[in-house]
Image (tube, rainbow, N blue to C red; front, side, top):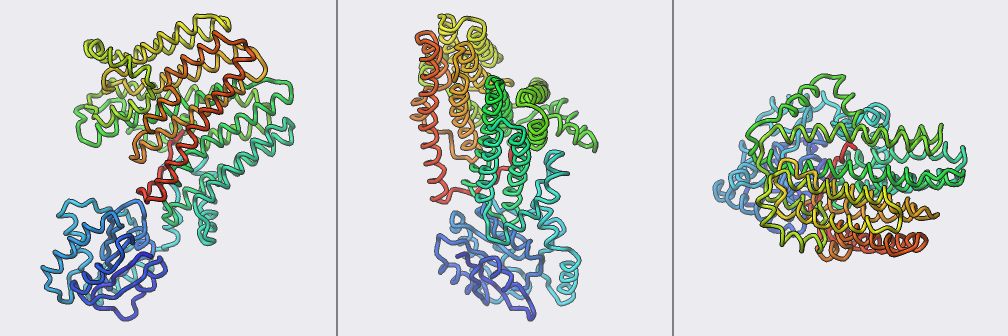
Length: 610
């Protein structure tokens, strides 16, 4: 149980003690610095501890933001400072120094909590200070100031601010105007009944899976029900994040579940639409797989670009701002262009609304056509803008960024072995080499899979060439201006090769098997992203080697297509899909559950817009 140490002379009529108890703290009273240090030493090391000035006046939500957010080891607001177990040593040192300086006397004017915070700052500790906005947090020095602070508290509706802050500051048009105005109240309803964000996330997944099942019936009633349930699932998807922000229930496991389930919901729904279409005699599995591939590649572009440039900007090494970025910032300052630009990228709210409406009113084929056209346009728009930004600014990419891109590339043992022999050659080639050879090698294997007959040798020849070009692309650190394109080029090459070879097999069940294989591999790639985002590192090397890396899987698929008959190839795809899914899911679930149990730092991912 977290402990709050209330310091200084109690103020008659103050509600601070009851407010701390309502936030779950076990409250102890201390008369001065020496007493506070003694009580601090008695708090078990595995518990959160807070030091709060007894004269504190403020909103309960200000206290909540300052003292209960699990994402930050150290946090402070005026009159209060808190430390989680990871930061207890820093707090103890600061407390000991202040006790020595104050001589253990009762502090009548200065706030001990604020002095501890200043000492932490002097030690270089990273103390989080939440944005309070209109919320009040103060330590009045006299009765007049106290009355003024109380009047300021009464003038602001704490609950209204809390509800408003539960909604993301930046979101899509559909989410902002059609979902969030009421989903925040659902989040509050859930909080008051003790529901957790993870429970709401699971409810959203179940709802989406039921929607996929309705779509799979292939009836008009089923399609209508599927559209309605998909919207309901999205409402719950918004609610879980708002519940996390409303109640500050953040966790590493929760962030992973939220991100992973979003992809599972959407791709399961694609499969449901394809099954429903098949019941009506229309085979749209190729379109369903194409939509999943396009959406996954869009996300990889987002992830790679952000990882390549995050550190360069944050470390202050950007020597020349991009004119493209300046134009983008200018457009974001004009009201109507903000919403147009957010809708153009077809974020999840707009995309799911479009899918739901088209499912209810049209056919799965029309739904997929619209989805592919919309996502292709938005992918072209966003990728072109990022390429222009990369070409028109000078920045030094860090070793961390290069490592993240190498992890996202997902190179297996074959590419790694070949890359070691090509390092000398790679260093002598121009900076554009990595993305150029990744694109050319990927285009070659995809083109041969699409344009030659099934069972021929040319896809296998192209796959061997792809292995060599992939190795050359990663033979030196990925620090070039456009090297962030290497991972998405690899993803497109692998996924599209599987799609075209399955389509060329022209046997019933090959494309659904290919859909399952791509889904399993895509899960591994998304899992890699979420680990990097959570500073947990990439998946272990043994896992990457076990499932072959992108070049190994591409080579194996091409070998199977060359050696097996079409029915045998379908069976091989099914076996590969099951095997890859089992390996990556078991390892991923083990990792995230273990990280949650050992108290990994809580995170809250606001989510990519697409």
